[in-house]
Length: 460
Ligand SMILES: Cc1cc2nc3c(=O)[nH]c(=O)nc-3n(C[C@H](O)[C@H](O)[C@H](O)COP(=O)(O)OP(=O)(O)OC[C@H]3O[C@@H](n4cnc5c(N)ncnc54)[C@H](O)[C@@H]3O)c2cc1C
Image 1 (cartoon, helix red, strand yellow):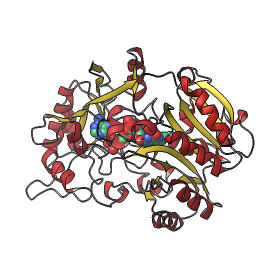
Image 2 (image 1 turned 90 degrees about the vertical axis):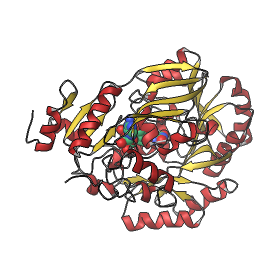
Image 3 (image 1 turned 120 degrees about the horizontal axis):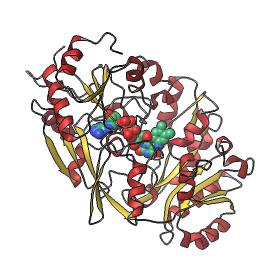
Image 4 (image 1 turned 90 degrees about the horizontal axis):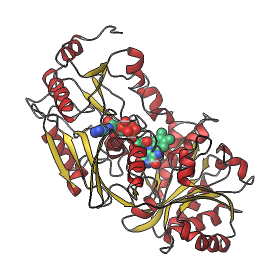
C-alpha cells in the first residue's frame, strides 16, 4: 500500500528497481522502533518518530546502489538489524530510509580461528554454525536469537562471554569490518582490528557495516547453573570469586537480588522464595570446583541444565535469557512501572560499591550485576531494575552512582554524546565521520557534535 509518499521517496524508489522496498505505513512504523520504550524518558520523545520506507538490500552491490541514490537525493539512512537496541539507536529522527540488513546473512569464510559473516546474520546463526566446526562466539548479547552481528557492533558490545573475554572493544575481540561509505560515490572500505573502533558502538553513524570478522573461541558444552544464597552479599562475593577463579572455565555469571528471580518464568518455580541467585554458565569439567566454591559461600545449587539443549528446546529457557538486559525484560512483562540503569563498578572496590548503591536505594532499586572483565580486571557491570518515579529522581540516582565512582552509561538518552561516559565523541571518530559521511546522512541526530562542513550540508 503506497500511501502518501513524499516526492523525494517516490523519486528514490524510481531509481532503485529490483531492490526490495516496503512502504506499507504499518510495517514502516514497526521497523522504525526498537526497545527505547524500556525508558519512560525516551518513550514520549521517540514515540512518533518514523522512517518513510524500508529498503532491504540482498548484497553489497545493492547497499552501494541504495546509498548512492540516497546521497543524490540527500535522504537520511538508518541501518537496522534486529531492532533490539535499547536507546532508540535505530529510530529514525529525520525520516528517510530504514536500511534493513537482515537479508545479508551469509557466513562467508572461516580461517585461522576468524569467521567472516555478513552483517545481517543473527548471532544465533553464527554461533550455531561455529559450533558445527567445534568453535563458538566469544561474546553475544542476551538477544542472541534476533540481534544481528552488524547491530551488535553498531549498537551493543557487551554480554555473555564478557566474564572471559571482556567487551567487544577489548583489543582482539573484533578482527575487522567492511563498511559502505556515504560519500558522493559510496564505496566499500575495510577496517581491520583497531581501525574497526571507528564504527564500534557508533549507532550506524559512521558507515553501513556489510561484513564483520570475529575471532572465535573453542566450543564448550556449557552447563547453566542457578545457585541461591541467604543474602545478596554472599551471592555477590561468590559471583566475584567465580569471576576471579582462573582455573574455572566460565561464560557468564549474573548476581540477581530477590525479588527479581520471582519474575523468571520457567525458573522461578525451581528457586526458593526470598533468596538472591547467581546464574552462571560453567564448563562441565569445572563442576567439582564450582561446587566447592558454592559451599564455601554458603550457597545451594538449585537448578542445572545443558545450555545448548535449553537453547534448542521450545519449552526451556537458557539461563542467559534471564541475564543482561533480559532481566529487565522479564520484570517488564509483569510490571510496567520499572526501568533500569547501566553501571560499571570500579575494579578493586567492586563489592563495597555494589553494596553502597544497593543499600542506599534499597526501596526503589533491585540490584542485578554481571561479572565481567574490563581492561584485564574482573569487576561487575550492572543493570539494576529501578522503580520509575520521575526523570529528576532517575538523574539523582545516576549522580549518586557517579559520586561513588560508578560509571553510568545512561540508557535514557539517545545521542552518542549523552550516553558516553565522557559526554563526547572522540576527535578521531568525528574526523572519520567527516570522511565517510560528509553530508551527515547516516542516522542523523545521533552524533550531535557532527556538523557538515560548508558546502556539504544535507538538502532540506
Ligand atoms: C532484552 C534485551 C537484552 C539485551 N541484552 C544485551 C546484551 O546482553 N548486550 C548488549 O550489548 N546489548 C544488549 N541489548 C541491546 C541489543 O539487543 C544489542 O545491542 C544487539 O546486539 C543489537 O543488535 P540488533 O541487530 O538488534 O541492532 P539494531 O537495534 O537493529 O541496531 C542497533 C544500532 O546499530 C546500528 N546498526 C544495525 N545494523 C547496522 C549495520 N549493518 N551497519 C551499521 N550500523 C548498524 C543501528 O542503526 C542502531 O543504531 C539488549 C536489548 C534487549 C531489548
